Length: 350
Image 1 (tube, rainbow, N blue to C red):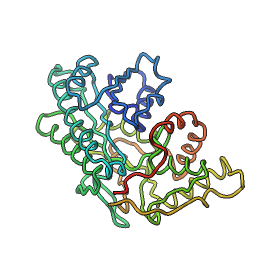
Image 2: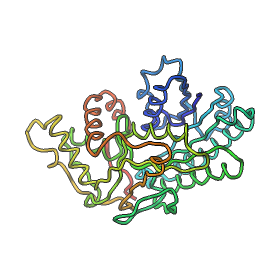
Image 3: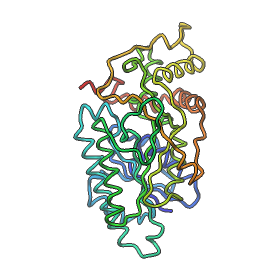
Image 4: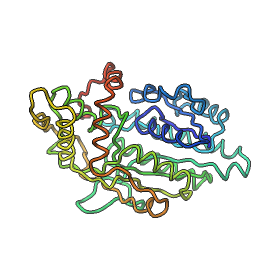
């Protein structure tokens, strides 16, 4: 298959590109604008692979995107390009509306034109996968789970922009017959994650000997999904999912933020002890909570398990151990990022 991946230099995107190229017969065109979170070094080892092409392209640039569709002639489109950090959406919501809403519209239009230009046989193989988040559903109580039919209730500029893009993707399926699938995933973690999200912030702050910030009292609960498992799930959905359907993807791994931070500290105590022998947990500091911070997210992933046979491979601790070890082993990758404007400072104070 010839596959366009948007946002392929980002965290989930770069892991997905690697996963796809592990399958014989796949070719990947990576369209990425290279914003602050797009890091071409994450895929530097693929530069000479004839099955991989990178094009620095803004998905809001309709003519340029259309040129790439015509030149590459994709069978599948896997749309991951997005502004994704809630704190940044509080400080600057305009970029989120532009990329997540306008960009998705632009890409859908290019995909529609490409789809309509194909022969009947070629249309049978074409797929457009829109990758989204569980944050569009809002917050849960103590026991409920998000299902594919949960009503949308976004609470941040980020989740509102993703909710809008989800609706656009489904509307292009219903109105224009574009063969669309949608996925909504829980919190991802793993290699190549830009260090503004919770897990890399904890790891890097701990190693620097700085206070480890935890919002509020750390009572917020998330379902954690290892990014390699997510990439595999996305491949399952686009290859075998039912057109027009939504699939929720979760890690079956709910944790309170404070419990996760303590686990990461314990793993660091084991893998790279502090020189003074003190536990990293002593660096934990509680800070003012984020505005509009949803209390709990949790995914019911039974549909993708039943229909497509997918379940996460990582258990409650194995993925976190792999992630901590990856950051310890890739200090050069981290330093390339931290030489720029972002220095692990807190965002989203509004």
